[in-house]
Amino acid sequence: MGNKILFVASECTPFVKTGGLADVIGSLPQALTKTNKYKVSVILPFYKDMIDNWSDQMEKVTSFTVEVGWREHKATVFQLIYRDISYLFIGNDYYFSRNGIYGYEDDGERFVFFCQAVVETITELELEMDILHAHDWQAGLAIAFAKITLPSPNLKTVFTIHNIKYQGIMQKDAYQDLFNTPPDHIAGMEWNGLLNCMKAGIFHADKITTVSPTYAEELKTPYFSEGLHPMIMDRHDDFVGILNGIDLKEYSPLLDPHLPSNYLNAGPRKQKNKEILQQKLGLRENPEMPLYVMITRLVEQKGLHLIQAIIDEFLHEDVQFVLLGTGDDEFHDFFYHAEQRHKGKMVSYLGFDEAIARQLYAASDFFVMPSLFEPCGLAQLIALQYRSVPIVRETGGLKDTVTPFNEFTQKGNGFSFSNYNAHELLHLLKYSLTIYHNQQKWHSLMRNVNDSHFSWEESAIQYAELYRSLTESESTSKRSE
Ligand code: ADP
Image (cartoon, protein in one colour):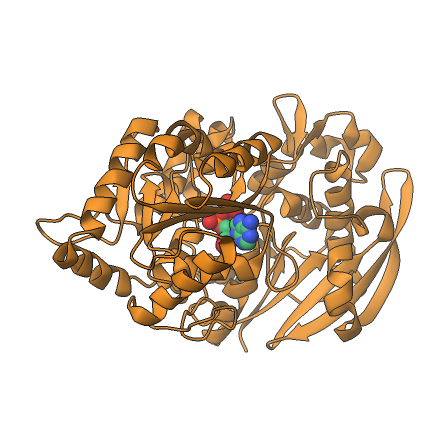
């Protein structure tokens, strides 16, 4: 077995998930392991929500005290081998025995503890590794702490930006209060007068990646970078966009145990899922009725202000619309009331539910994702796998994965619009209906959808190449010593 890699992250399927980050951390290690060049382990917080389903399969491997500034907190480390991958979980009741996983006022402190504990776990367990690969702000400080405190000059580090909107920002005086690193290291962790965990990752990592080539370009501009573009430009030579994939076995309409009717391609067996869903959700029962769905975190990023502006007009058409999501109150209220106005045609399922999500992907004809920005987006990739046609805005990974259908050349696997404008979206939604009702064009579009597969294979090769560039530069420097 080749190089050893340790992934550090805050969520991972099947243990804990709020969004696409969990899918990536749950599937990329397997894809890398399959290349036979890497052995990947994953380290995560041990959240309260995991206890019921997973704790009896875990084994306690060590415990120690972690200093968070003047505080002393116990970290207990558990291990679980799942599908040949070693997962380590860092437990601490005070920080992680809470409902949900983010959204607490002391999130900064919680992930300072986590990152400090990650680095101490490496020492305690004498983990041998070649590359520490940290994901998003919650893990950014693990790279900073490892670089500053671990005495291993050959350790290489990679930091992946999954979404720059969330940076883990704290007041500057938190450095003295929470950090144990020497005062002169504050410079690498500070941005615009505040502590910034994402900046710390970007600053200290040997290589930085993000999750699609288009988002990589977008992050170099002020509009998309949430203020960090000078930092990204500074690290320009070490920065690359690698498109996310999905686990095609996990997201397979043929194998998915959540579906009432498994299928391969669009046809009667797929349609059966629509009929059953219509019944279950109280929609008018008609399998010919085009069904549009959204499955999303309810945050501004996902283009929900556009949906707010046009949903009433669009529902004048002979269509049905189902939303599954949870997030900001503003959108909970909006979708709750929209359902009341459109009983029988629209359902708002306000919650997080993996089984319902799978049933919606399977039942739907169209998957709507008009994001303001979208680093990669996995939902549209899952939709393609379940033969639901994505309708997206041309940004980030949506632009890299959805090609607009051209009815003359018959090319394209979805529909897309470019400006963040509600009328453009409405126009496109109505246009998608005309294609749905044209049998010949719809079949051409579905043929292209059937051929769209975004597995990890291609992307794992690109990660492997990136890791190789790091480990080979290490052996070159060793040779020259
Ligand atoms: P993001 O990471 O920004 O949330 P992605 O499109 O990359 O967006 O990934 C979203 C993932 O979370 C998909 O697997 C999607 O099916 C899932 N998801 C989002 N909202 C829900 C929900 N309310 N219930 C179940 N799954 C959800």
